[in-house]
Amino acid sequence: MRASLLLSCLALLLFAAAPADARRISANAQKLYDTLAQASDDYREGLAMIRRGDTTPGREATRDAAARLLEAGRRCQDTRGCDGARFLAAYDALVQEGAELAAGGEGFGATAPAGPAAGEASITSLMPEAGRSATLLKGQDLRQLIELNEPVKAALAEWLTWMRPSLITSWENYQQMRFLMWPEYEQAGLPEALLFGILAKESNGRVHAVSRAGAAGPMQFMPATGARFGLGWRDGFDTRYDPQLAARASVLYFNERFAELNNDLEFAVAAYNGGEGRALRLKRAAGDKSFWDPSVYGQLPPETRDYVPYVLAAAWLFLHPEEYGLEFPKVDGAATVMKLQAPASIYQLAICLGGPREGYFRALRNLNPRYEPHVPIAGGTELRVPVAVPPRYQQSCVSGPRAELAVALMAASKPTAPPTASRPPAGATAGASVRSYRVRSGDTLSSISRRHECRGATQLARANGLRPPFVIRAGQSLKLIGCG
Image 1 (cartoon, rainbow, N blue to C red):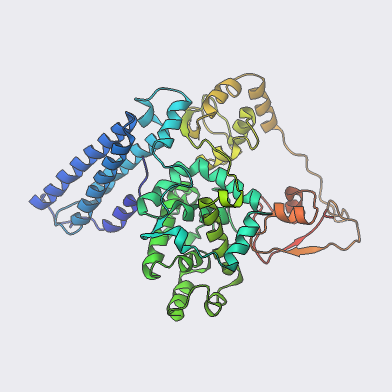
Image 2 (cartoon, rainbow, N blue to C red; image 1 turned 60 degrees about the vertical axis):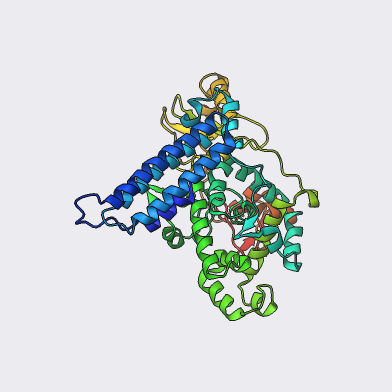
């Protein structure tokens, strides 16, 4: 049902194994093991209730079982002869069973009707309606914590105008990953709006986003910070790109910040961008002054002064779209598991699947972050996909004209011209001066291209030597080649 924050908590609490000289299980340890066994059974019974359609009591049963398991795990660390690894292993198994249920995998399909409806029920029955979920942050309503001052209002204006496409894209991408990310925040008691605000500003919901500074993933963790909270290279894969693990790490990060910053939302968000050391020093020096006090706010780096209002404004719009005439599109975020019948890359699948508007490339990429999009994935591999994909796959990707077309297009290669020093860049005249533009916080290549009447974001990126995913940073200088 959910990959809970409790697993991370257990990992921290039970890192030290039982004493090496323990040769027998003490009576106290045995009681804890009995509690573990009973809690595991109760958790699985809760999942079974959800499969049968008894969603509310099932959710309550799993939460109660998880709480008892966590308490037993805490007591285990202080009990001689108690092996904390047993609690970790047991909870990890429960998490995986719950994740399969939420993703519409075998854990759900065993007792549910086949087809898209089964996958849809597996998710929508487990989570509250998007935008209407818990808004509490450490016992306080997030809507009361966000101050609609001038910086936040200015950020609202930008999200609702030239940044609107970026906000909508973030929403659509998030809905596809919501069943992986939101349970981590929900279990920790953190508001979904905060998760969305961070995601929208950091990556637009693209799990493979990479900054010039080296931050990566949907929540943009730097390598060292990510490592502190369980992210890093495992079996040849950087788990910063994993949406579920990245959400879990951000929960751990925020809980640590809230603990040292007295639950101050603005300072915690500032720390996420500008560094926890700077945020803590400012908080201590501020005394009774508000984060927005000019003497405090003015000491932040320009990027962080923009970042905090952007995140809070995106969170506010997540909670109050109707007040601003904002219509977030309906996205079926239900997912299921599909087995490939033949080798295919994500690019190839995106071509043969077709689909409306954006197609399925981004969803496939976000839900299966371990695979490079251009590299064929072995037949028999199970992919996590939107529920609409399996019937399309059978119809257009297994065989037939569309499947053959996708294979042919993927086999094609772009022609390359030999380099020449005398050839001017595309859109520029030899000998002519080229205008430049210094990137501001919040800019995207698309917004710059629109404002300066360029020939598209991709051409602007290539003219400046940028490689996919075409990441730009505030303060960077771009040549406006091929622009009006």
